[in-house]
Image: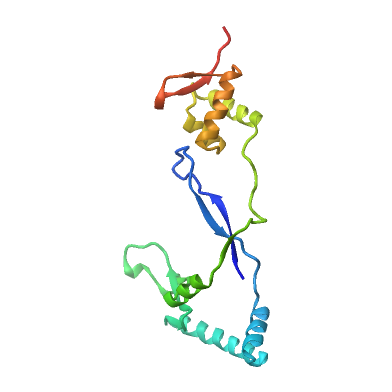
Length: 203
């Protein structure tokens, strides 16, 4: 048995226009619901399925009651369950009443031993997600439209601007900008990091 992963582009949060490193994500096979989970445990252990179902419900009920009453619950090596709260933003304690405080979330913190065992059990192989977007960026005509829209508002365009507007990486951006220059659509000014692009005016 193995777990598959696919590689995704890391978003350019700082909008630098530079190529970003890839990062892996799990290609999930689906969801094992409670019924299938109990079937698997039953087949592996031989414990009565009805007994397992009853125990599961009892665990769930007891866990709910304990964390609702302010306890942190350790569930074996799996980890710890607890709750967090939210309330109105106030500066004085007297302005807060119990009615204004409510549940924010049920939190889970995985146990270190369980996390270690999961890592040891994993056998990774490259796969491909069936739900990811496989687009190849903007077409040439779409890029020209984007450039013209920008240059209608501003006198020039930088390579960083082009990367930000199109989502293309640095290498592809330079290749496309140079192609537009060769076609006589753009003209380049400056050198090095001071390079800018503008519409080529007809003489």
